[in-house]
Amino acid sequence: MLTNEEISDAFSALRREYYRAEPLLLAEMRIKNTLDRKEMELLAAEAITGGNAETRGAKLKQATIELHDALDEARVAILNSNTRIKTITQEIESIKWQIRNTENILRGTEMRREAKKDG
Image 1 (spheres, helix red, strand yellow):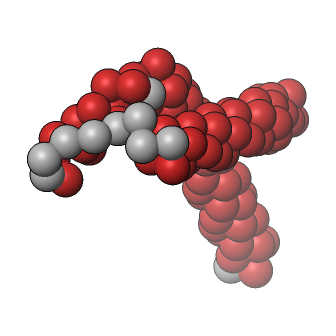
Image 2 (cartoon, helix red, strand yellow):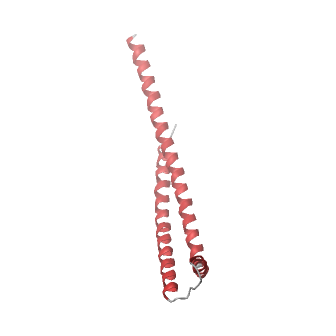
């Protein structure tokens, strides 16, 4: 049987994870904006040259590799956070199911008890 503490802990864990996710999302946005600005600066300054788009794209990525790496790390952190949120949400759904199941068992027990009284 579930305790109120277990239910409260699950909802608290979900709230904590949502609070942790927000700065991760903001960090990703900041890194992406910084990367976009850096790429625009390099292109506008004509610091990136090449005979075709693929060469220029490769040089641009090479010039901003640290930002690309930071963006990848931020996105992995967000994926990990989303996975934790989904796991906690599944746990809460399980708790809801257990509560409904317990209510049905209790209702069935009460109905049988009432039937015995009447019968």
